[in-house]
Amino acid sequence: MLDDTLKTQLQQYMGLLRQPLRLIASLDDSAASTDMRGLLDDIVAAGNGKITLDTSGSDARRPSFVIAREGESHGVRFAGLPLGHEFESLVLALLWTGGHPPKVAQEVIDGIKAVDGEFAFEVYMSLTCHNCPDVVQALALMAIVNPKISTTVIEGGTFQQEVEQRQVMAVPMVFQGGEMFDSGRMTLEQILARLDTGAARREAAKIAAKDPFDVLVVGGGPAGAAAAIYAARKGIRTGVAAERFGGQVLDTMAIENFISVQYTEGPKLAAALEQHVREYEVDIMNLQRATKLVPAGADGLVEVQLENGASLKSKSVILSTGARWRQMNVPGEDAYRNKGVAYCPHCDGPLFKGKRVAVIGGGNSGVEAAIDLAGIVSHVTVFEFDSKLRADQVLQAKLHSLPNVTVVLNAQTTEVLGDGQKVSGLVYTDRVGGDSHRVELEGIFVQIGLLPNTEWLRGTLELSPRGEIVIDERGQTSVPGVFAAGDCTTVPYKQIIIAMGAGSTAALSAFDHLIRSPAPQPSAAVAETA
Image (cartoon, rainbow, N blue to C red; front, side, top):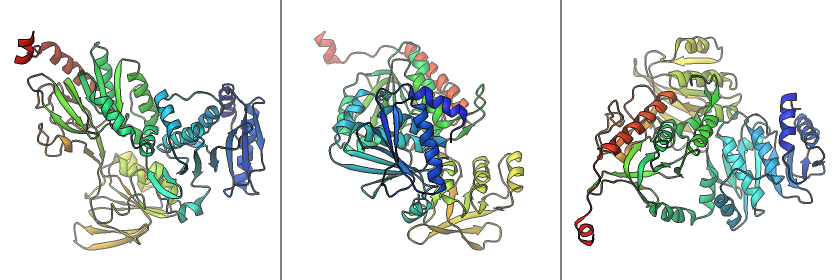
């Protein structure tokens, strides 16, 4: 089943097993079961006697298999083949079940063990989804660590009928106890916080007790990571408060213009960024959303207030909150999000196999999405607001060569239609003739650019008409001691490598600000005490 390269890698990994495993398979006479049996045989062969195969499983989902410790039947279940992006999830599930320690903080492991109550998770994924492995691996680890938690990983392409019955139109999608739990990228810490209601309160208390930083970076994308590294290398107290470390890079698939790296993928780059930052004494505070910026007062400290009620103070602040996908903001979009309205063609495209879809937007991201989807769906219609496509010519040429793609120009989408359960079409207006048209389809992929994550800064510092933080060539904002970098700023080009450079510039500027700033004067009460 596996090629020689993967077999060699698997054998090396299985050499790390500390205790024997048992694979309990539920198979039938289908071609998918034959493929799964081949995969399981390869795993057993790679285990050098530490892994056995039991084909007496009786699970209703076939093909599927459970990874369990020898003598046990509880473990992570994979329904369908965990290959593609999920091969790493399979390997990690084998290693963790076999006693190899996960690279997770002990306090997180303790939190999983302390979860009270029975939880039965089902997570639907696709093999092309780069967001799915994080969720799959988080839920797998939880099931391995806590026997009260069960996790079944379901490959949507193998169980297409089940996917349609449960209206799964975006992955990863997680059910708990048969009810919808959440969808989209989630970290282990986020899921754990949902189950442990006291976690947020304890984290807020811990953050509130922290001493002031020299540099506090708000945001953990490429700009924030670069800023944190450059600041920490100066030997000053550095902190990072990020809603999710990696930022929008986590939602990016192929990266081919990162100089000196011919090809990488967003999640891999995000993991490398975090690993690099952790090489230094940087206090990383993940899952933290900033809600208010308070300029420095007499104490010389800038305050950043967080959604959980805690506050952080610092002598200087670097804002690198990035941007997010722009929405159409038309009737029906919110109602049918993850029910046919999607934003990631790589993740959700396979769920629309053989169906009719639309791509909203004719820039590079929109045309790339249409090209990818054309190989999966029956037909793609690209709707562009402008009178011409804005994508690079090489992409336009590829798009126009595809027989199942239609391009509609001067099209303003005005409504998303649905039957109450899923998308059934859209309505657009011809901006030249003024006529309204209805198009029947099953999926809509929105690719119309970015919005800066700066709403929380309005009224505090200068923003451009587009909501971007206005900065000078040094990254300085309109507030002294507050710098900014990356896609949330007025920098003209939103690129990973430009964001990294801007983050480095902001950190160097913040350090220069610190060494040139006079020490804050003590209050009168402190002076009298002295």
